[in-house]
Image 1 (cartoon, rainbow, N blue to C red):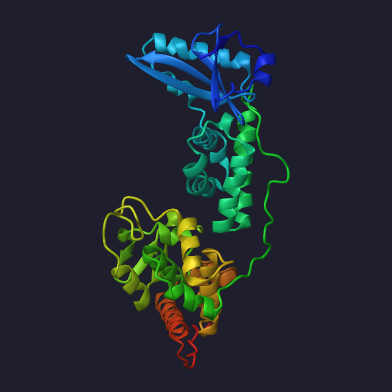
Image 2 (image 1 turned 45 degrees about the vertical axis):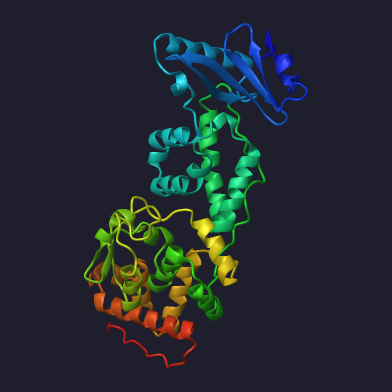
Length: 385
């Protein structure tokens, strides 16, 4: 445990001692404060005793937190210790804590607040949420974007980057020391007007792949044209009498959406073990199915398909409805889209029977595709206008 009076000049050039993977250089001015140095990283730590136990607090990276600021934070932590408090709260500037503070103060004013919150919870918090924001390196954000792009496409990666950038810039405007690691050029290419749908051969391969709960989830997406989160967060309480009612709180259009489930869709969920609240779960129903990008990679490997996203299932289902002869208005209502114009404003009929016909026609066409049978397509009658 080398001790010395830390100076800015020393901190800039500090390296681990020979033979050490990392070295703690303890400051003689503020007892317990140390600069932890490795070949690739430098961070501030405070070693202290509380309740008879030796503990270590990490509260930021150098240069993001200067020597003067580190000494100030160490003094604040030691003052909390003297009063019998654990100073971990002083180091609560994790990325998740800052994101939640931003969403509570400024982000809540945005119309996209709920979507941003969902994106952070789904893509960011599991990987970087617990990391002190001052210690997050550019390479970590790049790695996160790579995983998002692989699992959910470049558009989602770029949108997630925009949220992180906004939060970090907001934090920088309120901090004396924080500098955002995000620079220009990190955004991914956004596919404009994406029109990818699965071919019949890809549908057969994906359908046939043995992928357990995730395979059932993907089949359900194709049979219902649901958005990925609508289905993944579906609860047993939302299903009644063969209908799935997506509550307004979870619907993008903020209205309840009733989907009459086809026989094939009902068979999928009826075959699942009923445990806890959520239909698709890997956690005894306590939480909805997660790690979708990991499951997706496994399904790609098992089925020999690639280059598609879970949202493409929704687009594929819509295309198949047209092939099955479903009238456009009925298909759009199945997807939960709001019909524009006077008809959309004044026609309050739920189109329950028409949607039920549409979903059964979709299921029948998918069955013909996956079994390789050929049959004529029955044109569904549209409502007289």
